[in-house]
View (cartoon, one colour):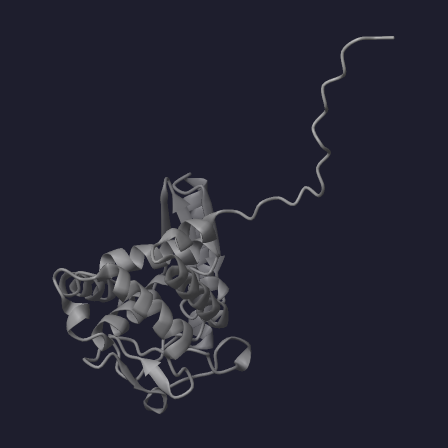
Length: 245
């Protein structure tokens, strides 16, 4: 459930030393200590891989195993996650350290949705389009963020918000979305997700676009940069008339 102030300060000092050593040895080409995250980390790029590194957190490997178990149990999970991660990344809402929807929270949302979807969510030959659209509608429109919390580790996929232990999120406010840690009953994992209102708006816009088009063209359209507004263009030059005076 987090670190004491002294532990956090010591952890940040240690991470800064590690960051400097990695830079000095040219193991990474980009690295930055995120000291304000719930669990301070080094975000870095090693070759073509983006890596998050921390010290003193004991549940990292068990979280990886839990995610692998969900991929095994839900055939729809991997493709839906990949589409949503791309959508969030295009709009710079995929990074928990800047208030977005990080990977662990996104996995929790998708697993919760598949559990709530019943038999279609567990199908070995799922209707991916219907499940994706259902996800976008659920978390863009239907989910009661005030009274309910995501609970990917429970069979129902949800629980009442008052059953969670919720500390103040960023800027001292209650997080908009609450989600129980699948590995620790009663603990909320969304304290850093202070931009989730933007995430919900993105899911809503994607649901509307997907409903209108009936396919995933919305992803390409949303990923495309907005066309440059160059203002009124001069008409093309007209060929000069033949024959002189």
